[in-house]
Image (cartoon, rainbow over all chains, first blue to last red; front, side):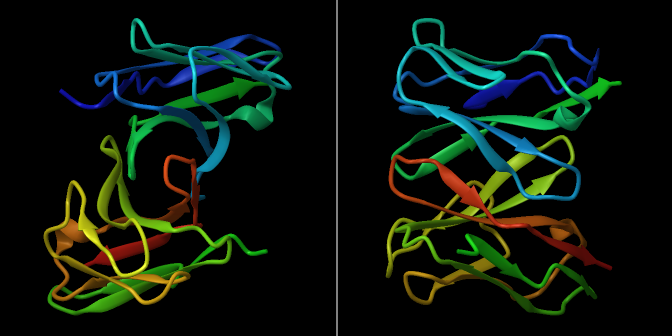
Length: 109
Length: 111
């Protein structure tokens, strides 16, 4: 079983839609939960990270962690064409980071 | 503040050739990592260095060697390149238990 599972998509939504991206993880020892955005032919960039269960908001982005069900989500409100990218979830414990395979998102104007 | 830098950006090798990918970070992070990214496989850890002077194998270390030259620099060496090593390579750095910062990547093609 992989440490992190993520639906690869692709996901295509109209501009202004609410987007929900999800991952599940296997090990309750994971301590940090992260979301990265990766534009085509670029390196991943950190979007959000959280340590605890619950929600964390940053502008149009909300990261949600449910440790009891080992489920992490990223919500994007009022999606924009500039949000079109691949989104990767990641978890870590100690010095090891584990990444999902990424979900490709296209926001259609 | 350049963050994480990688050289070269792009490289073509013939099977059996060797090369070294260079990575440097200016954020004073203790931990550094080398990942490869392949379609459908996501990011896979090759090697990491928890701190200066230490290195450890990740998920896919075969065919690679690393050197943590100092706190800033972490290089990845392919001694005898194989077509299976065609990939995009990313260097990253982080503080322990903190989030990582990635470099722009090196695209490697092995013919």
